[in-house]
Structure formats: C-alpha cells, structure tokens
Amino acid sequence: QVQLAESGGGLVQVGGSLRLSCAASGRSFSNYGTGWFRQAPGKEREFVASITWNGGTTHYANSVKGRFTISRDNAKNALYLQMNSLKPEDTAVYYCAAARVFGIPTAYDYWGQGTQVTVSS
Image 1 (cartoon, one colour):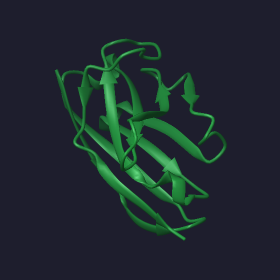
Image 2: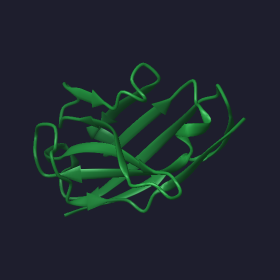
Image 3: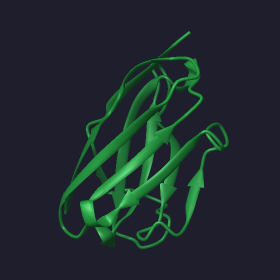
C-alpha cells in the first residue's frame, strides 16, 4: 500500500501560481502511476492530470492543458502539480491519487485527503 498526503494549497489571485505537492509513504512509489483530481463545491470530482511511473508520459484535462504541469520525483517519493495562470474555475479541493500500474492509470486505488485551492478574482 501507499499513503498519500497533499500540501501546497491556498488562496491565490487570478493569474497567480501555486505548486501542489503529494508526499507518498509506504511501498515503492516508483511502482505506481499517479494523478491529480479536483472537486469543486457542488460538482463531481474530475480528472486534472496523470503521469506514468517514470514521468515519461503525461495526460491533462483540456481545461488545464498549457497551464498546469504534473511531475514526479521518485527519489523523494513525491508528486507535484505546478499550476500557472490560475482562474476562478480552478477553485477546488485537489487530490493526488495512485494506482499500482506503470502506465497511465484508468482507475486509482489510493487517495490523499486533499488540499484546498481558492482562486480569487
């Protein structure tokens, strides 16, 4: 198993940037494909970005493509989400997730508790 803990959320103005981190503990993090999801108030959780075990392939939701960058550092057991040019519609609780696959996961087994991102206009 792997345990996940997000950090780095906060309040930022429109156009600003934030970097989310996800610290993983437990089994070998490099054995897991990982991703970021978000859930805004009154909405369903939605996919944001994903990355393979070695960082070789990434996928993004159309709504964040070109503004967000997902990355990972297996030596530090960490997953990151760099968010630039933030918009009010990016306001949500952001979750990191992992699945024991080397490729891009189609389903996730492990989830963090979430970190709040609020973009003010």
